Every structure is written in structure tokens, then in C-alpha cells.
Amino acid sequence: MQQVATEIEELSLAERAYRAIRDRLVMLEIRPGAPINEEQLGQSLGVGRTPVREALKRLQYERLITTYPRRGTFATDVNITDLAHISEVRLELEPLAAAQAARRATAADRATLSALRRELAGADSCRQDAGELMHLDLQVHRAVYAAAHNPYLEDTLVRHDNLATRIWCLFIDRLPDMAGHVEEHGGLIDAIVRGEPEKAARLARGHVEGFERAIRAAI
Image (cartoon, rainbow, N blue to C red; front, side):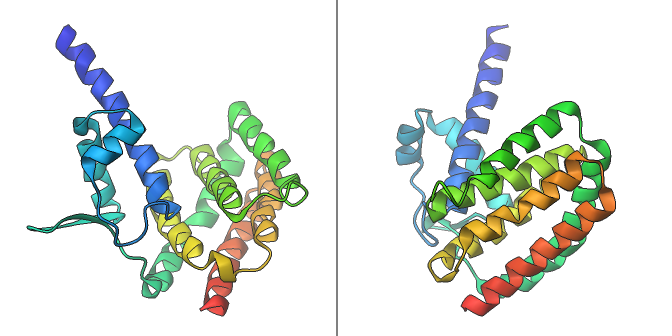
């Protein structure tokens, strides 16, 4: 019984470590190419090395870290040539997730999305910095994916949105009107909450297309 409890605790700690390290990598708080130190990460997160190692295994699969024999583990570089491949996937799957969210969202999903909608409405007036806006952008995307209630679709889109966000963060100083880009999600959320799948799909596709245009204009 004690062994089972310990395993459950380790799983919980590993999940917590995974999410924290993932978002540091996505937001470039751990810079591309930077070495990954398991002990330092564990200390900063207040967990042991085992949860950190479990988290790093997942992050390697998600192309956020890479391990080289005899050299160690590093945050992956952000390669702008990946943009076309990432956008190709997102252009197909983001509209699908948005449409399914409009069809399947529960009352709890709608409440979460509505709360994010209120945050979006105040994004510019609060004069949040770019990092805060990007965190809000991630929250909206993940809430939409969760509301689609398809774990395979959600997993795929979270991974690709993470990679897209790293590219966005790399060019964030060259991109005007960050608040405007993030606030675009307002209409998408409204369509999902009102149960309008076709409109939600159209807005999601337009958002991905706008993201790629903005990045290419900044290069």
C-alpha cells in the first residue's frame, strides 16, 4: 500500500515538474541551446531528481529538449524553417478543435473560456507585458483544445502550439500589437460558447494564418 501511495505521489510530482519545465522552455525562460541541469531544476521546483527525469523524457519526445551522447541534455534550438511544417499541421487541426469545442464544450468549459474572454477584454488596458500576453495566449489555446474533448487531438495540438509559441517568443520584440493578436481570440471564444462550430473553425484558421504572416514579416 505504501509503495502505491509513493508511486502516485511521484506521478503527481512528475506532472508538476513536466508542466513547469515545459512552460519555461516554451516561453524561452530556458533559452534555446541552454544546458539542462537536473539538480538545479529540481531545487527550483522543490522536487527530487526522479520527477525531473520523468518530465525530461516527455519533453524530449515533444522536441523541446535533446540529449547528445557524452555532452548532456539541452533545450532545442528554435529553427524558423520549422514554421511551415508546424503551420501545416495547425491549419488542419486548429479549426477541427475549435469546431468540436463549439459542439462539445461543457458548462465548466464555457465558464473557463468566458473567464479568459474577460481577461482578453482587459489585456490592452492593463498594459500587460509581452510575456504575460503570451501566457494568456497559451491558456486560451489549451482551454479550447480541452473543450474539444478529444485527448489525442488535444495532445497533438498542445505540442504543436508549444513549438509555435517558441517561434513567436523568439521574434516577440519585432512584432507590433501583441495585445491585438491575443485579443483576436475573443471572437473565437464567443463562437465556441455560443455553439457555432463553423464560425469557430473559420476564426481558428484565420488566427493561424495571421500568426504565420506576422512571423514571416518579422524575419
